[in-house]
Image (tube, rainbow, N blue to C red; front, side, top):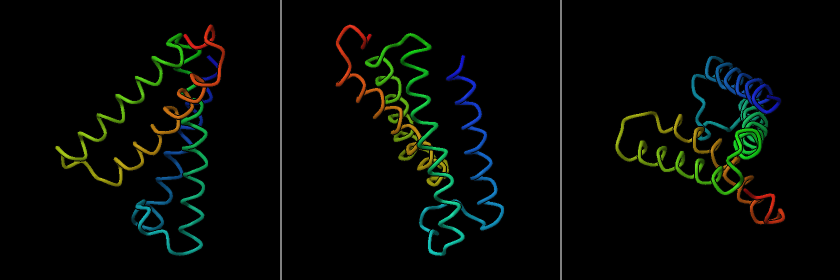
Length: 123
C-alpha cells in the first residue's frame, strides 16, 4: 500500500510539474531546454520521474508479488508499446518520450535488483 500511495503522489507531482512547464513555456519538449527557467522545469520533472520510476519498480516487484524478473518483463513490454506508438501512431513524440523516460527507471530498478539480490529474493 505504501508504494501505491507514494507512486500516486509522485505521479501527481510529475503531472503537475509538466503541466506548469507546458502552461508557462508552451512546450515540455527537452529540445526547448535552453534557459535557466526551462532548465528548472526540466530538473523538477526529472526528479519526480526518476523517483516515480523507482517506486513503480518496487511496487510491481514487491507489493504486487511479481518479483523482479516478471516486473522487468512488464516494464519492457510497456516500453515496447511506447516504441510501437512512436512508429505507428500520431501520438505526440514528446509525450511518448516522457512515457519512455519514466518506464526506463523501473525497468532498470527491477533488472538491477534481479542481478544483485540473492536468487531466493528475486521471485
